[in-house]
Length: 303
Image (tube, rainbow, N blue to C red; front, top):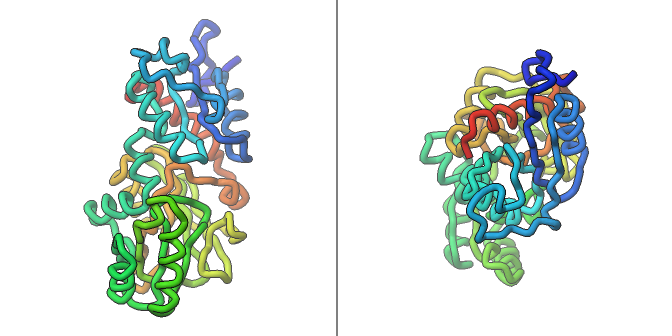
């Protein structure tokens, strides 16, 4: 017999919620989410982004051929998920997360702007659109400075520069990469941290679990080889992670925090946050909680 999200048996006649999971490919996390959904009796379908054909003339969910009660975004290709979520929103299909939350979190500059406006403590960050102004931005935050692409994940294309000559060389390389995104220079102060940062995983209104991501390299992304270690969810971690998610409108996110001399600061909010490393440090059923939040989103019927 199928179980509801609260563990109670569902009547045999109760229709299963149709859950679509938007994916680029099936990683450990997505496989766990699909398994958790099936355990709950949910009619779940992986929606591979490369196979989608979005009929922008469709007027409703039935006409779109994506007639689901809710779609969970686990897409790695940010541009594909952005277009898809906006189309689903138009067709009245609830999504987790919303198109707007994903848009804000897929762009580091947008992410920083919203967090700053909400009073969430973050590292000092400047934007520049020319190499000379970007070098002045580096001088403003002080060397060493950190250069990041405004889009991207897994710690790719991050650079720590120790002076103007090194900064100029890297900025010119970024400019010459071709994409206009690389000519938007996101300059952030470098914070010496204790060989780790913190990933707090938020689902709904709860911080489910947290982990230290530890590495000798200054970039402590799990995708770059950082080791996940258990981290207690302190009141400060909980309060700051939830504030950050509320600021961007995220109901499902990995919040990256850094320990500074003045307390915790939020690096960014990741609506597509991975939790493979976190799974090794906690007994909390993260995949199950994600499915439960998706079911709640479907019942609320808010796109």
